[in-house]
Image (cartoon, rainbow, N blue to C red; front, side):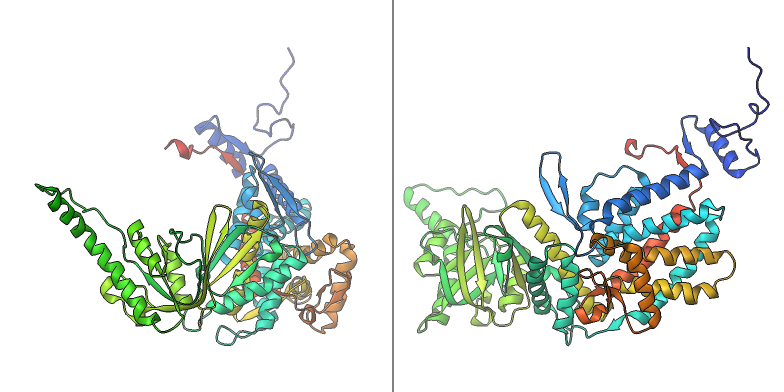
Length: 565
């Protein structure tokens, strides 16, 4: 047979004739793992880095085309053929089936970004991908990943400090600047919806947050009810200064429209309830049975009579109406008694809606019939029922001092409604963030362009040795945002970056990219603002994930299957 070559007896890379140093810790770790677990799958240092960088670049290429107001839309098709049209990075990452472990890690970081701030998912993915892409250039030239990471860390600290000087202070909850809030919401929504619809939703979102904002308490966005009706067009979406309940009255004779209504919100049962323990009653004739049935009903009827008495007390001698909304049930006999007295009764209201009712209409939620007094009543100018097919909706509108409201989303089909719902949630968060942070950042890539110049001209000089390369890579990676905005708007990315750098160097103020003309402009004059917390979170999370991926020197699949435990 053939003689064995000289290199075959020494440890070497599979498929190559290159000698591998047996004292190399990476090789030793691989050999040790193979001896412990022969089934282990191991990826060497170069291959591991290559896989991580490629995965980040692949995910970046998927998300790239969706960034900004000129971004394109992706159609997601489910297994059952259900459709979802979206350009929202968060929805894309949640709905897409990603198998590569590195890409899954990046996607989770971006989704966490959305959970914390409500925006910036696409930007996070792009910046992580670009940091690794820029790092690849230097790694191919033989630079050690640890040196690059040191440069990244220095650049990250300097970037966060620069953000503090770049932000623009604004008013908080006690004196909200509605014009600025509208600009912030418009910038967030235009990157997710078409322009006309985004502009309409902007006003709705700002009014909704201003309605629930209270300077003594943190803003609770759960006090904005998001109700949807598959009805009419998406442009018919509106803000209801009050509440929309997704059920109606259960008696045909009850009034369908009540003006100038007193609202009684309670947690009192108006139906006959069985005893909690097994009990039996013995009777010897029909008369005793009738008396027993009457006694059982007596308690429930007495509660209903107290409601009717309260109605007469506050409504006699005027044209005011009366509505009772309870968390518990109302049985047919009680409904009939209420209907005869022209009282609108709604039963089985959701607990969250009871909280919102009190905030929007006023009054107190009553827990026992003894507390029925005129002081516990709320008020609404108009309560009416809207029937849509088999669905019933009750509108409680024209309330005096609303601290809770409803955004009523309308659309012809399910995917329009889900797109609207995702966009409205992000819009609400952007307005809330502005009021909480008391600061905004000029948008349109202005922060990234200014940061690039700051890192190259100022920070790079303070870093010593080869770590300068890390700062350079970080600075270059920041330009991915203006580059992508330019590409998605149909302009040349390099021309735009050079024009932005020239304008920033003049030091006249923030300089961003005008997506309609492709020229540099001042985003503050056009009202293009980003959330401060979004930029801060991106600078905190993106470099951390990029550095962790750069420092991976081996990928091993040798773990115990967790599901079997």
